[in-house]
Amino acid sequence: MNFDVGEVEKQLCERIKGLLSADTGVDLIQPEGDRMQEVRTTTVRWLTSLGREGYLTPGVMDGRNSVSLVVIQEQLAALAPSLFLSVEASTRIFGRLIAAYGTSTQREAILPGLTSGQLIGAAALSEEGMNIENDPLNTTAVPSTDGFRVTGSKGHVVNAALADWIAVAGKIDGEPETAFFLIEKGSKGLLIGDRLATLGYEGAVISPLRLEDCPVPSTHVIRPIDGNNALKTVRLWEDQVLTAASLGLMRRAFDGAAAHAKAHQSGGKPIIAYQEVGFKLAEMLTLFQTSQLLAYRAAWMSESGDREANALASCAKVFCAESAEKIASEALQILGGKGYLRGNPAEEGYRDAKYLQIAGTSTEISRMKIGDAVLAY
Image (cartoon, rainbow, N blue to C red):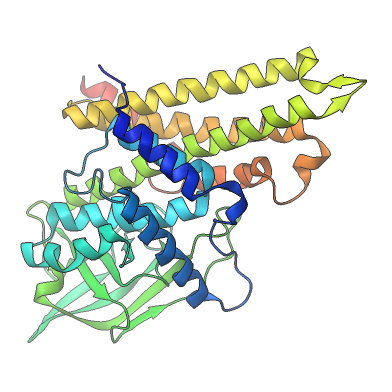
C-alpha cells in the first residue's frame, strides 16, 4: 500500500495554492438577490483556470479515486469550499458519468469542454430528500416519436442554475433500470427553481428543478446495462467528493485555530501555551491525520479495484464528515468570541460540516451499508 504522492501532484497543489491565494476573494458569490449570471461567470473563470493547471482531468476517465486525486482535492477544498463543491459536481460526478456510461458521441460532445472548464455540468439524482436509498425515483420518461418526454422533479441539485448540461436520473416508462437524461440548458419544459438559502456552502448554487413533459432526443439518453447499479456508482463518486471536502474543511479549521492560538495572548502569553488549548489542538490534529489516512486507504482500494473498496468508502465518508464537525467545533472554542462571528473558517466550517453528513449517502444510511458489508464477509 503506497500513499506516496508524486512530484507532479505536489507541484499541482502548489499551483492551486498560488492560484487561489487567500487575498483573491476566490470563493463563489453568496446569495444577494439575483446575481446568477455573475456567479456563472465567476465559476467558469475559475474552472478554466483550474482546467489549464490540469486539475479537472484526474479520475474522470477511469471513474476511480486515487490517493493523489484526494490530495489535490483536499487542497482546493481547504482554500475555497463552495468553489470545490461546484467544480467537483461538474467534473468528478457529472463528468465521470459521461465518461463511464455515455456514448462515444456524448463523450466527444461534452467531455472536452467539461475538462477545460468551458462547460458546467450537474447531476440530479435524489428527488424530495437528499438520498436515493429510501426515496424512489418518480421521474419518468415516456417514449415519443423523437425520443422521450420526461416529467419529474429534483430537490437539491448543485450547479442546477449554472449548468450547460444536467444529467437527470429517472425511469423509462415500463423499464426497471435507471436511465440518465442529458438535459441541455434552456430546454423546453426545464424549470430551475430559486437558489436555496442553505446553512453552509453558501457560495455554492443549490437549486431544485422540475421537468414538465421535457423533450429529450434519444441521442441524449444514457441507458447503462445495469442502470440501478450505475446510479449507486454515481452516488459513490459523490461520497468520495464529500470525503475530500471533509478533509479540506478540517485542514481549514485546524490551521485557523492553530494560527489564532499562537498569535492571541491571554495572561501575558499566547493561548497555545495553556494546556487546555494544547490538548484541544492535539485532539484536532489526531482526528485530522486519522481521517486523512482512512481517506487515502479508501482511495487506494478504489484505485486497485479491491472488493472491499465500497465498504471502506462508506467508512471514510462517515468518519471524515463527523470528524470535520468535531474539529470545526473545537476550532470555534479556541477562537472564542472571534470564532462566534460570521466570516471565519471555523464558523464557516461548522456550518458546512452538516451538509457533508446529510448529502450523498447520509451517515445513518452509510452505517447500515457498512453493517451489511460486515455481514457479507
